[in-house]
Structure formats: structure tokens, C-alpha cells
Image (cartoon, rainbow, N blue to C red):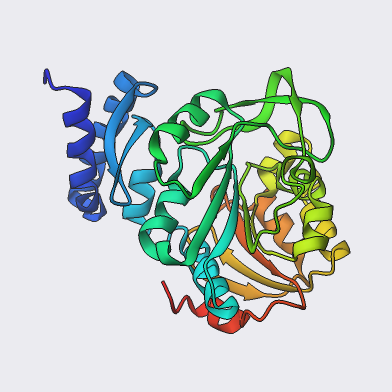
Length: 304
């Protein structure tokens, strides 16, 4: 049918819940595949977490938050609990901010708990959308590629899907570190979601971790760690060296999985070899001994 991309996108979003119905599932997915093939990299205007936003047509995030009601819930819970235990709004670092989905989610669900958002995105097209989508004065945008040291790293490319970029391009780009970019900021919460590069980015923020002891949430994705050439254990090693000793694992869909890091080797093998859990990975919260956050309450997602 001769419809516009905006109408197609809006219709797919409004009907995606019906895709859970077996009789309609194949029809919806077929329509979505056809639309993505036609308009995938083109921009559309939509509403994301109550705010107007520009995104790529093929960005799966708007569908993920509809299919999986707890998607990114740990981020909201961690910011809310941090503000509660500290008795004030908190400063949040968002590395891998992409189009601003995390920032918009936090501003919608726990905006009163946020004092400032330091948003990092190194892929130019995503950074441009990030600047367009984040209009709140508490949001400070840093268009820079981060790593564990100054120097060249593989460029960020969108090989997984249109909503994210990972560091395994053919070109080299200059990278900085969190310690260099934020020498005077002591964040309360740090979220890192960079498609396998999380360990190296945390390694570039050792001074920050030892200075501020923020609650850290990182995506632990061994498959993507291998893709970008990062040791899957590096994030844990960096955080342990900084004194972190409490761990709460959530599934990639935002549900509590387990406490502790005792079986990280087995979990890594599961993520790399599973035949029944496609693209399996975890969101991991790491807490310093000085943190007053109750990990049991965090796992229960009571604020969410």
C-alpha cells in the first residue's frame, strides 16, 4: 500500500502487542520485515518514554519495551534506590547513550531522582539523534569514543541493529577515557552498555571508580566481547580491583537472575555456546562495600 514511513511505523507500534497472538504473529513479523527492508535506515519521528524523538525506522527499541515489560527496569531501580539512600538527586553517567533511550526512560520514570546525566556516544549519527532527542538541561552530551587509554581503536559500526554501535569497524578512530573526560565529576550511578567494550571503558575510569564508588550497571555480553576483542572477564576484574564485591545479575529482559559472581566462568560458557538461549547476556549491577543499597530490594525491583 502507498503509505508513508511514519504511518507504517506508528501502525507497527500500535499493533505489536497483537503479535503475541499466535494467529497474528507471523503476519505482524512479515509486515515488520517488509517495512524495515523499505525504510530501515531512514529517520522517523515518534514518541519515546513520553518525549518526541527521532530514531531510525529499524531501531528495535520501541518494540522491545513493548514485548518485554521489564526491559531496562534495573537502570530505573538503581537510580531510584541511589537517590533514596543518599537523600538527594543523583548524577548518572550513561556510556553508550545511543539515541537517548536510557536518558528518556530515567527522566520519565524517576526524573525527580536525577540531578544530572552525563551521556556518552561515539557514533556520529547516533550522537546527532541524541542531541536532538535530549532537550532536558540536566543532560550533558559527550560525543567521544571511550576506551581504556588514549589512542586509536576500531571505529563504531552498527552491525547488530540500527539502535546500537560496536567497536569493530575497519577504520581506526581516536579514543579517550572516562578519567580524562570527567576528571572532576563524582557520579553516583554509572551505566555502561557498549556491545562488548564495557570492560575496557571501565578500565579507563579506574580513578573515577576509586574516587566516587558509584553503583555500576554494565551489559555483560560475552559474544560481543569476543567480537570486539575484549576479555569477557575484564569488567569483573576492573571492578574487583576497585573494591567492588556485591553483584546482582539480571537477564537481558530485565528480570532478576541471581546474586554473586562465583560462577562467572560457567555463565560465560552458557552465553557463548547456548543453543536454546539466542544472544544470551546479562545486565550486571556491581556495588562497592560503601554502598547502602540493599541488593535484595534491588533484585525485587520495588521502585519499578
